[in-house]
Length: 198
Image (cartoon, rainbow, N blue to C red):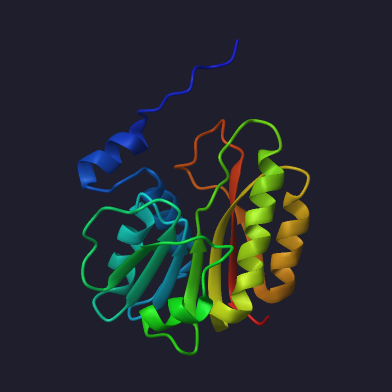
């Protein structure tokens, strides 16, 4: 018999105790600790930023000199500080030039992050997730500076190996990674890539 899904595990409780908006904060925290995707002063774009836990981690990592822009289809209601801007926007229609202008990053972002996921139905979710990842890859030439970094969520499935290969073709290094804060039953993975060369 399958184990019941535990919604309030230790990461959920830890996020509440430490003031993070969601358990997903620890996913990005672990990715950053392993790969050093973010540096003080960086310009960072967060695609699919609601409810804002990744914005909290990014704002801490880039510090006061850094600039962070987050977009999502849902409004993000939290005061992240003066160096974070959020807006309701769609990754399929947003203007990359406007995002770079908001961040003061004319040469491009130092890192692009995506925790975007489709509305899950249990059928074809992996294909929809792969489509979102490919949209991120389509946007990178207009968004990411040479040498920049990427972390994006993808669901394991038939398209995952191809999406990983496509990412690896555009970066010095690209690997799949499953953070400890991801639920055991979840099919989510993160593609973490460094050294964008297009």
